[in-house]
Image (tube, rainbow, N blue to C red; front, side, top):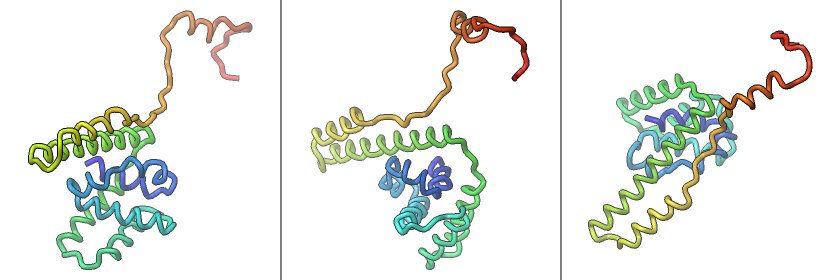
Length: 171
């Protein structure tokens, strides 16, 4: 459940502004309705310029936004918040999780349009247009990677082609 992992990191205003455009609320609403409600609270809170200090703040704001939840729903949401609190990711892994979410959301929309075509609710050209939207305009999130070379001449130049004594000590 990648979407639960994303929750914790979108509490940070900077990360929210950077990555919120990659979230598909329609996909969340249909596939993860519980997490969708939590995302709505995050969005409204960021729009009101209220800062989060962690999952506990989100939990308090969520339960104040939805006070009429049943006891079983409260327990389920408490479990979700506890699981989100225990997640720790690096920036690179977070970007890969978001990329995975975007791909699944695109597939969900294309599949939904395909189903509408099969039911006669949409035309085939609508499906082609939807597919072309993701085919041409779907750029991946840039994940910085450190380049490592195996070229012997380049490695030789980096280490031995410089003047001076080659001691293995840092200066």
